[in-house]
Image 1 (cartoon, one colour):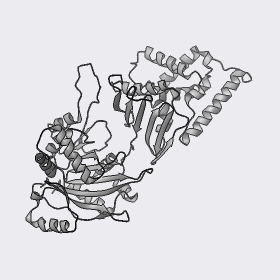
Image 2 (cartoon, one colour):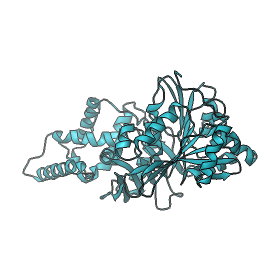
Image 3 (cartoon, helix red, strand yellow):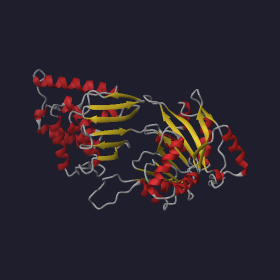
Length: 467
């Protein structure tokens, strides 16, 4: 196709497009862009035609995890553009169009420029014209919205979940999944989503934080780090608790570097977020609700994953998050020799975390309350509470508590526990559950050690490697 004369209307259109492309490039660097539809008025027609050509070449229409080689895709776009001269896309402008189309078909679609922003934590779409992002802890509205219509949002959601063999329907209007970079997505469609299709994307740091970075940023102190390493090497079972986006998963990712390389580790999650590696690490992912429904396939839950992990000979089990009946199975696993295991849980404090764990375990079976409390007392060693300061990216360890049953205290430790009780620090959570503070924050907001961990009868964890 030849380019229109520079002096005619075609030349004016090309100049306008070049200006928009330059504006787009400039905007991408500061977090906002001009949408492809602003550059190409026939954007919807272009995407439909190119996708039809892509599918007609024998590519599966649902295979959005990978695309053609760059050169082959470029040739396909060239051919379709030549067949549609009314689009007015000259050969010199095809590379930019190819880039937008690759993002649309195989990448993050309309969200591509924002997904690459440094410090991006969340993207939240309430409806097609109301989209927010959180960057370095600060929320801001994305204007103009990446989406032009309700259909744009629905198409984006459909494409993301089609790549995972799932779809949102009237019978299944809510789904959880992941993007190609590992980011987590939750989406809902009408009638559940009253104002139109909506979603939230949680983006994860591709590189786990190091322990020293946490110390340098004030997440915790050198003293806490030394104890954290001792607890990990000593195979203590730990629960990381906190609110939404408080940094629980990120912290577990970081602590993972403290696990001995020779330990066999089984990681169980709904969506793969953890990046913990030993010489022998196995990842298990539950299948989401609605996956392959109607095909006679079974939905695999986190509870199934925990039960299956027990037959895979793990040294440690890590559950990305306990939120339902799998709490009971995990507690039982922690009482059968899988020392040094971890999980996260949503809770407002370390004490609340134990209470919530108890409630979730009760949901799973009609066990007596005393039996559940005994399980928790014998299974959980330490609860670490993580907090996030609203409107900022600042996160911090707020407290760490040891969990035990009063009958587990031996004679040598009884005097220490008595002193802690007299100091008003002993927390009586339930009749069979006690907690003592290992670390709490002082009035100045500094994390301070309150007590050393107490040896507990019945919690003789396996010896560290090489001991």
